[in-house]
Length: 191
Image (cartoon, rainbow, N blue to C red; front, side, top):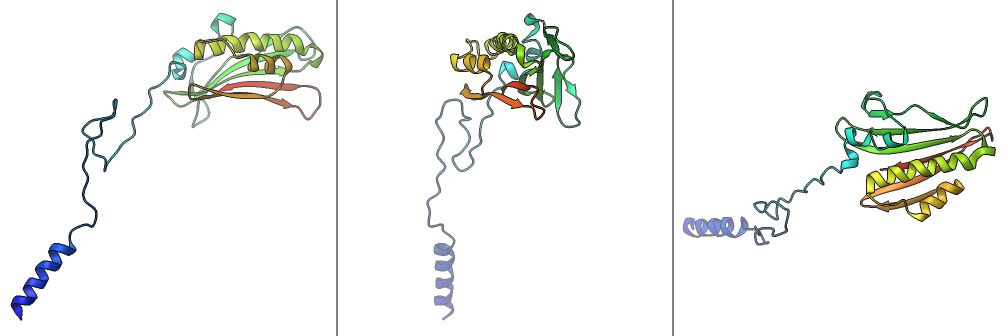
C-alpha cells in the first residue's frame, strides 16, 4: 500500500508539475534588437531623439527670420517652455496683427513646436497670412528638411484648418475665431 502510494505520489508530482505548453526560449533575430533577450521577456527599444526635439536646436529655427526665443526652462512647474516676443505685423492701432513662436516639452525633449498668428485686424489678414506662411515654411524646412506641402500652404493662405502626418509627427493648423467677432488666431503645431 505504501509502495503504491509512493508511486502515485511521484507520478503526480512528475506529471502534475510539468506545464502543458513547451518552454520556448528562442533568440530574436531582428536587427537592432538586443540579441541576448528571449522571446519570453521582450523589451521595446527607445526611438532616438530627433534633432528638432533638442531644445538648443529648436530654439534657433526661426532666428533667420528675426524671431528669437528666450531660455528653455521650467516655467509652469511641470513643463519646460521657451517662447519669443510677439512681433507686430503692420502698424494698425490699437492692436496690430502679431506672431510668436513657442516650444514646450520636458527638461531634455521638445514635444511641441507652435507658431501662433493673432489676426487682430481682419482687414489686413492677407498680409498676416503671408508672414505666417513665410515663418511656417522656414519652420517646416528646419524640422523635416523639405518644402511645406501645398495643402498646408493653401490652408495658411486661406486661414483654414488642416492636419497631416509626416515622419511620425503630426502637423496641425488650427483656427480659433474669437467670441468677440473681431479676429482670430492661427496655430501651426508640430508634435
